[in-house]
Amino acid sequence: MHCTVIRNCDVVEPATGAAYFAAISAETVGTTSLWYGLIKVAPGHRTKAHSHPHETGLYVVKGAFDVYSGDAMDESFTASERDFVLIPANVPHVAINRSTDSPVFAIVARSDPRHVEPAEMKPELDQLVP
Image (cartoon, rainbow, N blue to C red; front, side, top):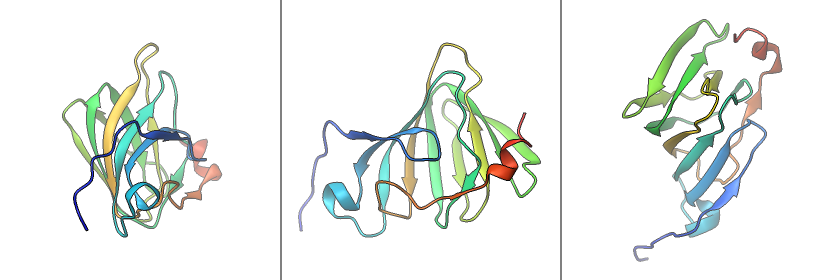
């Protein structure tokens, strides 16, 4: 085993509704417990309500987005540049970029190494998010 540099990451657009630039994953370098990359949420875009069975950590590099979470989507906050966000396993959530002209970029690490993370879609919760 040796260290590896990853360049020119492929973009993946899973059903959850954001663009992922997968850098370190099972598919790119054979990791077994870590996915690390960049997420982009386009201006005016929102993810679909979903949860996943692993932990996810984000660091907002550029922009800001609103995060709604919980079984009734009744908890919310705005994550801005230089903020860290923890999304615990199995917690339903939605991220919304309310900007009309700037994307949000966040560095993401999660404890599932696959390019396309397993997600349970929660369409019944989408209507609860303003």
